[in-house]
Length: 156
Image (cartoon, rainbow, N blue to C red; front, side, top):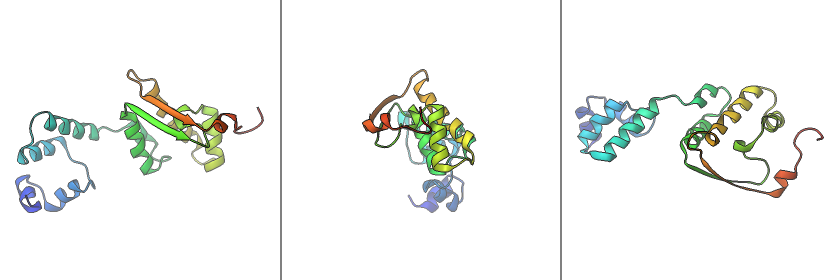
């Protein structure tokens, strides 16, 4: 089906449909339903796609930190928040999900300076909620032993 035909059938402009297809803008659940009907997608697949569209409209907690989180990282945190399992290897530092408040503060202070420091630390700590939720993420971590021995900040 051409873009012209699909846009006409969905009662939207060709440019709007193109932007949706290229993930430049979001799509509302009602438009997902119309597209699924047009493309003859039914059953569990259709319901899953409608639910994804509904979920995409909800703001994630991380969007409240958009002033201190890079846009690419907001996407990562969104995926992390929905993950059932995470795996990581860290050679130089403790992974963010396992950092204490003091450790995170010192890492940010040394790598990014004081600008937005407390909000960055708060966002880092908020990410750790995936470890305390009702169905916590399964986290597998491989660390270089030096990470555990390396002092961060002042003398202990």
